[in-house]
Image 1: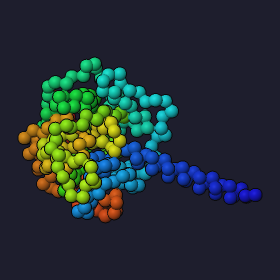
Image 2: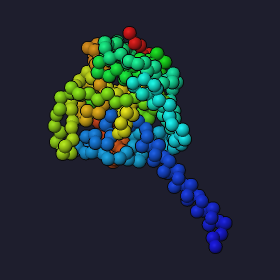
Image 3: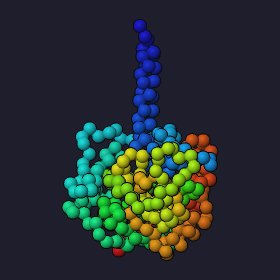
Image 4: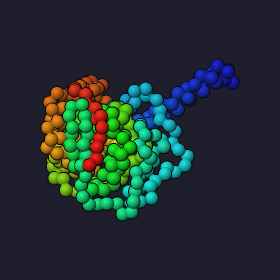
Amino acid sequence: MPSNEQRREAAKRKLERQLVRRAQRARRRRVIGIAVTIAAVVLVGGGIYVLATLPPGSASSDASGASATPPATTPPKTSDGPCKYTETPEQPAAKDAGGLPPDPTPTSKAGTESFTAKTNQGDITMTLDRVKAPCTVQSIEHLVKAKYYDNTPCHRETAGQVNVLQCGDPTGQGSGGPGYTIPDEKPTTLKPTTVSGAPAGSTVVTYPRGTLAMAKTSQPNSGGSQFFLVYKDSTLPPDYTVFGTIDEAGMAVLDKIIAAGITPKPNPQTGQPDPNDGSPKNPVTISQAVIG
């Protein structure tokens, strides 16, 4: 018969296993940006690889490694309109986002809107396109009105196959969102391209310089608040919603940011600093986001 000490040790080991599993589930749920995703073609050490799962200790983990809130026992709230914005109780809003966006029926699918990110490096001016992504533009407008993007960093810069500046996470860790998800509105007009070493049957397209698109996890309909600005033609699967373009004046500011270079972060596969993935060497903060 096991002693009290043996039973305590067994209980301790069981708890430790549970905590590890919870942390792993939390990492899988978090937003990992644009370059690490199921079926995404990623540039790693000069070769093209497909990452089938999120690796433990990836850049998507939070600094503490703590597990997320346990999954809700009741179904998450979903908006009633055509966009079906869905709450994420397992990942609460990183900053007050004003709840779910309005979801009128019908959702406007016409026209454009001016969007300006006022940063410490200069104003990045953009044009939002409701024709391409009505639900996404509706959500962005909602977050801007809630001041969700005010005083938030652009936390990630990448180069090589994927050339972007990524913004929209108040935590600056790549794991924060608005407490809800938005539906994918996948692009249909991007030019297909080929990438050496890409899996047979996979589709890769060019996201051209000046594109404004949504970041997401590997799961469908997992976009939230994070978006990326393409400063040079980039090759990706056509899974990332294109919802606008960066204007000429905005591109000039973006080019200035990119010219300063990248502060590398460790590659989640090797643990070594990756010169093509990190944070902007000159930190970028959105002091205010403005619509119109």
